[in-house]
Image (tube, rainbow, N blue to C red; front, side, top):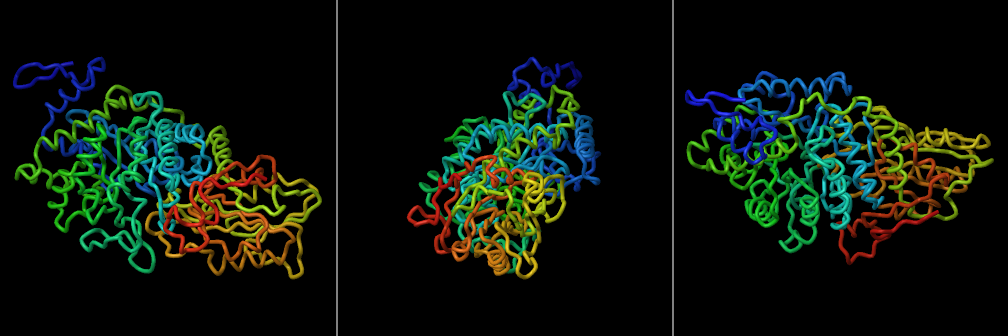
Length: 604
């Protein structure tokens, strides 16, 4: 292949698959104009750009954020949507492939009918790296089937304060367990080789200290598009300030990144949080000196949504700070024209060195070559029939069962159901949206039949012997005088994500406590199953409960819990988070006398 440069022919080395990647990148970088380089540094949200503009500006990446779905939301339409953008990129002057990203944080969770796995806090309770790696592999297959080759996962946050609305995205409060499981997931996602069409680039996030922020330190920026709620207790710790000194930052929050880099991380997403008062997106010391220098990370860094905008009131100033700090790709996500124009001005003015731009683009292009995007027809991807297939759902069932932690058992579990009367209460017992939690179909998730799945109530109905008398009332209002052998209450948090889930007090609500008390009056043995994205303060209710199970946010296959409750599958889950007695034990400290420590879990 050849092209004409200044009247002379020059081989298109970057298109030759047998040439080493470094030389292909050199050749392509040498051919690019400044605007094309800025285009590669741009990540735009899918509804904010046309396919024609993708080719015109040589845009490097498009993303679907939470809820960034086609209509109707089907795997087929996902594939068609992504490939339309890819075709447009292929028709640009240099034909540089597009990298499409999505938040597939517990399965390909934006896609209706995809397999939804337990959130990370549940996977942490399995303490099973092989299972987590398999979940990474399955998620990659379902994601790649829709032509998405970049997943904004795994989160390797070490959540020290369970008031944080992203606690469920953390595998553990133990940095070494978070490191082990995060690396396992990354290996599963990226496969044996990145250039296989079944491999999906992971995005290890959020660098660094997002799990160590202090309550009440979230900044407010009147110049930033205000997507957060500023009333009440929401957005009080998410995106806040990590006050740890550097030794603690390294000892706790940096540990999972060391493991991820060793496991092959090629992309890292920068965190919204500050460290010692300075936003991480502007932390040149951590991004360039430590991550890229000391730790030898040679992949590329991407911002979080509007992360650059938080650095300064003036967009120009914020962009200069962020790019010079080490940001390579900017999740714009709405206005690519403003980003490209401002980058051009900053380079012309000498405020951003061209060497910094070339370094960023080199890193991005290198990963695109490693993914095989230049050499493989983007239609060469897994079969759409894999999305939500039975084999994948079976792996999700195993994860549900292995993540369930038995916290209390006074001769309650396993349930002896023969010739017994069982009453079940709690909306979550029969609600797919509540068992899946946030980041499911929509950013915040939603209660109700939002996707394909099976509830605990379905599982009990299918698994209980015919001799069992069985009834369900969501509100626990059974007829006066009703007395059963066994009562099962599912206590569920409403779905939430990010700062919308920040809570100053994670105790059971008045309504939840009343439901437990009401069911206590209707049964001889009371079992409580908690659906939650964090430990809940349940000390005041504990004496009323005979059996207590932390089931976390089990995902689409909550029916599998029935086998654990009935003793068909043994309890094996252990806490990856310490369980506090009172809110006085929040945030985490190794000095606290917890109700149940990390590693605790009974067997029935």
